[in-house]
Image 1 (cartoon, each protein chain N blue to C red):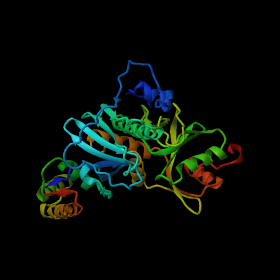
Image 2 (tube, chains in turn purple, blue; image 1 turned 90 degrees about the vertical axis):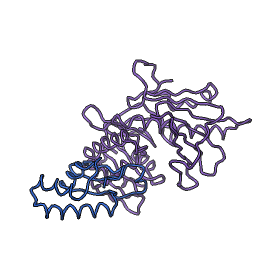
Image 3 (cartoon, chains in turn blue, purple; image 1 turned 180 degrees about the horizontal axis):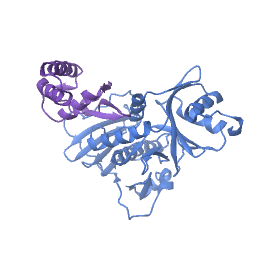
Image 4 (tube, rainbow over the protein chains, first blue to last red; image 1 turned 180 degrees about the vertical axis):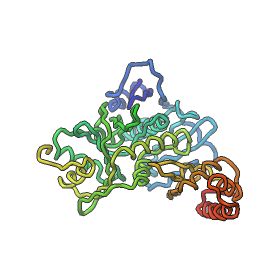
Length: 307
Length: 89
């Protein structure tokens, strides 16, 4: 099936079993039947034998903590092979094999006998990681980044909340929805930012929204960004330009050792941080946190009229 | 000498920074702000072999420094970039 996210087309192929299990559900708002424009990449699946890993160490061993998802990258002359699992200790291993330019890839899931719901849940989780990574790689040269953030819309503009996992991004979005009129959640984990023809950043919903099922095919101009840090009080300070750049880069960059990708990421990140306010927000879980954030990003007082 | 692969000069909001974007810079968290002269030098030597004399000549041509003075600045620059390291023999 063909999907379009932030104006970029891609093809995902599944078997009937996985379709009936709802793997395409988050993608439904993004489905398109238009075949006139070429797709950037395709991802298919294979339930047969996984690819053999090349001899030697992975190009990128994964030294993240054990409880995080595993992803080891192996480079071959025909492309990359990724060894993936939901945690470092998990025995269910999945593989992603790409061609040399990441435009054609295959996700391997070797269905065990009596595969249970837990197995399919893990497979779905890793397949989404693969699809999202391929989307990021293939769109980076086209003024697009897919950013780890929670995004809300208010009065026609999008506001993004960045930070480490557990920093409080989703919680802060919820506070905006709770305390402000006419707001909506755009995406709770991985919205997309694409520059328009005037190189202004626009935020798009995506099929990847983490634990919150928020899959909206909508877009709004980016109004501001805040790095969320839990704290005992509500304080905001502006980012230095280079720190804003590095924050946005760190929240979105993938495969940046490939020049066409890093050049694209640079162009997009630079345009974003030079046109849109970005703050660091130390905050509590309170209405006041929203007031402080909004005042800093919109330079407007939070009043009862918009409450 | 040459610039270590993966270091890129990027203009961000009218200032020049050297950032580590390649495989060899995994774990390199520093960012270096270059003044206009250093950025000019970097752009001229990027992708090429160079030494302190190369840089001295660029400085003399561009800014009119006497050779010895230019060589002094050039050597300081080379020494600093080697220490980070941004460049290698």
